[in-house]
Amino acid sequence: MGKQTHIELTSEQQTALEKLIRIGNALDCTHTRARILLLNDRIQSQKRIDHEGADNVRWRFLSSGLQAALDDKGWSGVLPRFTDDVEAALTMLDCGEPPERAAR
Image (cartoon, rainbow, N blue to C red; front, side, top):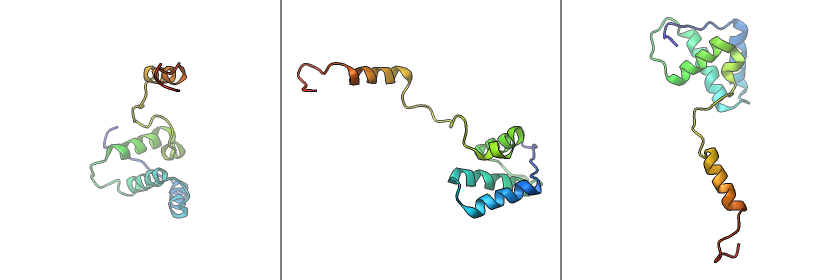
């Protein structure tokens, strides 16, 4: 996403985000995303270096709307700890016969 792409929140969206932050019953990551959107809306004219996370939130807002930018859907970016092959091997070890010298 280019740095020249700006977001413009409607007054209803601004109110909803400010209320979400003020109430404080959402997840921390949702609060962070709400703050990112409000901050980006308020500093359109200033030149700033954006972080990758802020770019991601802004891109999701522009492509799918406010709720998509706030929700924690999709791939987190963290690689899975166990691949299918490793999981299958662990399952076989767990469900198989114990070694001869082991009681269980």
